[in-house]
Length: 360
Image (cartoon, rainbow, N blue to C red):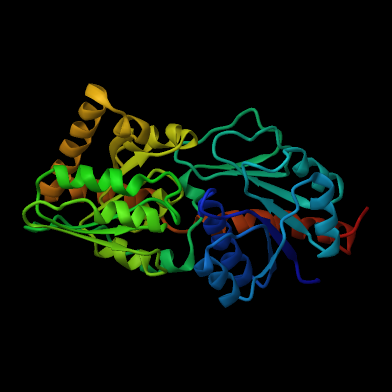
């Protein structure tokens, strides 16, 4: 059989964040481990580390077509068997155009399919269900897409309850913190009054300046650092992690991190509430509530600070969250997704002898 060729269509940058690229990178690693040829199509803006991650794996990065015709042309030019679409911005008709051209199409979604008509849908969010979708659906955290570095760092058991006088806290909000959550949550953490050694990942210079302006309290240290490929290690070393309720949620769960999440954009809301309700993480509320002025804003920040203080001061609370999270995401989600794609593409190869490429 010819080598199967897969394209991954996603974008990343200061405005878009890096979540789409990170989960496509996880898929790329698994496809490559199966002997599949992988190409990424998209724009990666002002993220040298992300470009370096692709280059280190020998993954080609090509301009990302935005139109249905452009997607089909790229699939034909690169002789693709399958295309994974992971974007909120692409024309939804692109999935159907690829299918009509004989390319097996996977739509990665977060709640809203946007009307895409794909062969396979993937929604890795906890408790996701889409009975209305016309194609096969892989839904829930059993299909969470995690990179090699996260899977390798997964502990064999969740961390035990350990008392510490000055907890190590890690705060990060996606690869770029496009919404500026870091300064807000840094101030909320300081407001707990609890001693801590706080590391804050800052994706942009203006965010770093705001974090540096926050005055720590007694026994508190604040250390802003740039985005790093060592994030899994920082997560496993932390006693508490504060993060956005996006793609990184599944990394935190897989690593058994005692986490507190904030919902920073609308499309995180449904998954955020499910995760908090099922005890996978503590909930700090929604970012607009935490940044609003007046009595409502003060009340929201005070409630978030109380939640964080409960985590910082209770080893048992941290251990309970960690155990529930660790048991929910086993790190094998990407293997299950790739199994489904290769089974389908392989069946098509066998049925017509030559594959689905360039059929039209």
